[in-house]
Image (cartoon, rainbow, N blue to C red; front, side):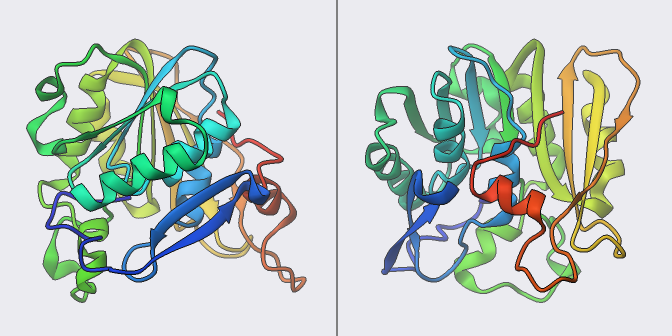
Amino acid sequence: MTGQAESSLTVAAEVTESALLGGRVRLRQPAKGYRAGMDAALLAAAVGAREDERLIEAGCGAGAVLMQVAARRPGVRLTGLERDPAAAALARENAALNGAEARTTVVNGDVALGFRALDLPPFDWAVSNPPFFDDPAALRAPAEGKRGAWMADDGLAAWAAFLLKAVREGGRIVVIHRADRLADILSLLSPKAGSFAVRPIHPYADQPAKRVLVQAIKTGRAPLRLLPPLILHDRAGAKHSPQAEAILRGEADLGF
């Protein structure tokens, strides 16, 4: 997740390498500032793209989602849009590191300028983990290295508009976001998309959902489906629930 603000990675001189999907993905990202984690893994696991389909991620950061989709879906062609030049450079580096550079393009650009500014044909899939806040008064000021990931300077509406334009008719939009923004997400996407599927993400089975995964189909007309929740943790002492652990290791998908 990365926002449309000043560079979040240029403030982090140190870069570390992490292993994702049980070691199938190597990801270089800043040692400080925003670091991709569970949300990126869940978003990638929710993509059911087929071979030769085209996918764009709005706000790709260092490429955590793109590289996990690349590992899960070997034939999918990937494009990342990223405003932060340092993040975009890391995303390109990660594509090369994972042998996915031939089918990965990272474009420097701004979601606020709209999809048409990219001069690209519509995609089969458009995915995003938009910044969670668009009101600076809504939370304590984030650290400088994380501001771009947490604050959507142009609001959630700009991200929804971009995603709607980015996909062809019948194309799929997938978003992970705060559960309390579900109504806003549905409202912003519904003028041109439908066939919504919503999967709540709960930290524990006895706690409210903190995240939602939402899939919409452009021009879709099917009724909304509320899917079984994903529970991230249990009380048995393990770090993650068995289902969440399987997703993190790349052994299970989270499709719609």
